[in-house]
Image (cartoon, rainbow, N blue to C red; front, top):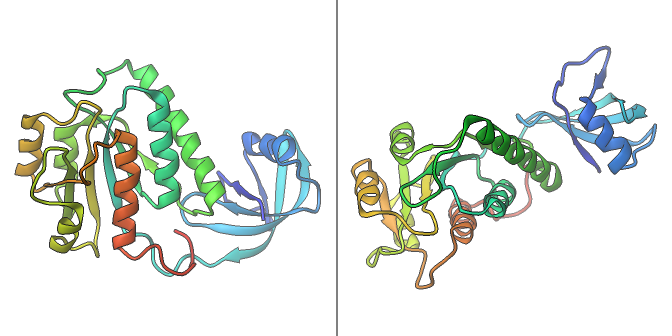
Length: 253
């Protein structure tokens, strides 16, 4: 069944009206017609089964047939602090694949060896693009909660904001003693996890020392040097696997 984002789930006599962008997407891209049935999700856990009485590029309405029950248990928070890559396509991939794999919060980071700070207008443009990618990924993979993407911030601010997380991991290519499996044996993964992935040039010694002082443990992802986007996708996959998310098909979060 086709899935469409419902920005405003308020109902008028059991009929909902979609935003203009979704109306255009349904009519022009999906080629939906009057009488078709779709699943609508609001990105915050709500989902409904609808029949479409009105389909036009400027107006899309759905008649609520059923309300789909919420998931029995929400996904555990998994927060990724990701150093901003030097190419736009890399961050786009991290947003898309992180969404598909169950990442709950993505925080772009300014680091000592990553890109310089940008003008506010350009940052807003990037955030809008990432939000669109996250929404598209949620629509495609059946996810109910759209990935939360925060404005870029410093590593120091990230460590301060997420010091409450019971499990904190920093991927570091110079770590020689502790692998990711060792970290999983040390940490309680039954609660929220905050993780850090560095830029192409790696973390500086000062950055690693600061994160360590805030309770982040350094881990290695193996003997091969991974690109930053590969490290991010690998880390999210491994954490969700360790938390038991790759089991039998259940309700999506």
